[in-house]
Structure formats: C-alpha cells, structure tokens
Image 1 (cartoon, rainbow, N blue to C red):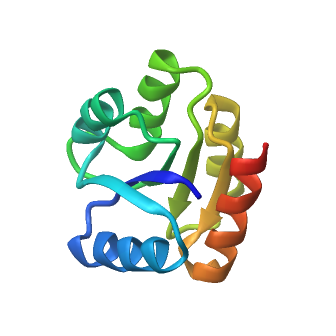
Image 2: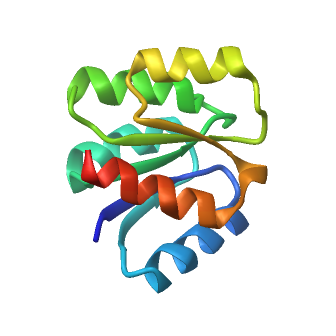
Image 3: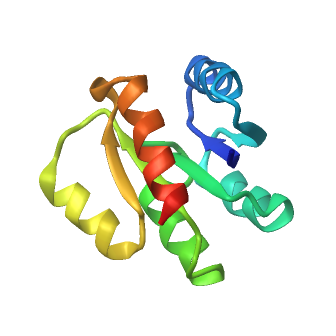
Amino acid sequence: MAKILIVDDSTFARARLRDLFEKSGHEVVGDAEDGVLALSLYKNLQPELVTMDHLMENKSGEDALKEIIRHDPDARIIMISGSSDHKLEERVLQAGAKAFVAKFDGHLKLLKVINQVMKS
C-alpha cells in the first residue's frame, strides 16, 4: 500500500481522507493545509503519493503541483477539485499530475484511482 501525503485546506477533509486511507491499508505520512507546507513536507517525508486539493490559500494546489514536479519529476500526485472543469484537468495533467478526481466522484473512485496510479 501507499505512503500518502494529504494536502487540503479543510481540516475536516484531511481527517476524512486520513480515515479512508488508513482503513484501506494505506499509511498517511503527513498532511498539509496549503501548498507551501505541502512542498516542505514532500521534501522531508518523501511520500509515494500525494492527494492535492486544488483551491487553497497561500499557494494553490496547481502551483504546489508544479513545484513538487520540478523537485521530483517522478512524483505521483492526484489533484482533487470541487470542480469538474475540463480545462483545469488538462492543465494539471500536463503539469505532471497522474490523475484528476472531482470531489463529488466519491471516495470509492478516489481509492480506485490511487490503486491505478500506484501500479503505473
């Protein structure tokens, strides 16, 4: 299973994702409430996978994605957004995200995507 860094500005969302991932056999190695902390934790914790919220204060998920990819071109990042904006999806995939999941797609889809990304 994956060692995961959760990045989301919502304390509630981070707690729900942590619970979901741990119950599914993954290890949550850390969590961050913004893109600034995400980059620092990524460098220190070296997770196998990052789930990244798109809209956050201080530094957006999209900007943090680009910085993490510059640091580690092989980083596995799944962008999560409350929007199903296809242009956003195209941008983050071109920037290096391994997948894009809309929040309303649900947790089962997210777990399925995590398994797919970890196999690739």
